[in-house]
Length: 238
Image 1 (cartoon, rainbow, N blue to C red):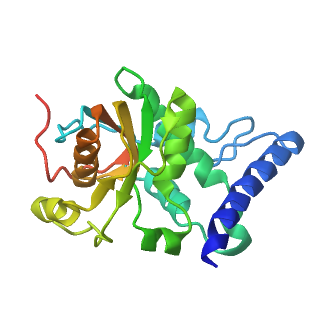
Image 2: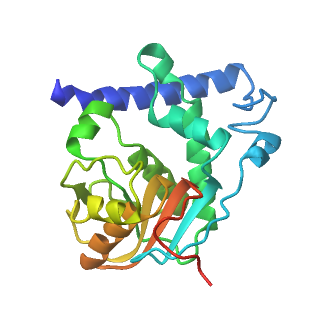
């Protein structure tokens, strides 16, 4: 069964792309939120309903951390649907993936120059990857690599410990929870963009960036879909 998981996921991705392309030929694309015609994945009105990310905080080992939107309202729903697709045929719905990919592309366009040499996703532990079937950050990193033309290194980082969830932990506990939880599997020189779905305090991103810098990265910029308003770890930039 273990050997079948990757082919199954690849078939899932191909099925979504094939079904989406066929539908676009037969039925004009519609906004995924309000249903407006000739708008995909979101129309301008629904996109404006997503609150822009207003946070700006220094995170150790990162040159910058860019998010497209605030983690509130519709953004929470889209990310949840993307990260936790239902079982069966309903799980083949590619709309949440399209919306979230579009948002991470927006974040990439907001990032400071220079463009990345390499794009790296925040990894899942192998046990969580096996249970979930895919790594959401890897899907987003693939989109960022397409937007920038950078080299995608999906396995550059490895999560060596299956850390407990960060939810409910204070800033010190979050840092301790992820300390030493990542290793770099390859040399990563130049400018690296580190991709994740949601950033809260930045503890995970900071630890990943620290490891990447030790393996040759000159600059590490985090690219995320959304950011929470809870700034527990770091002071705002002045």
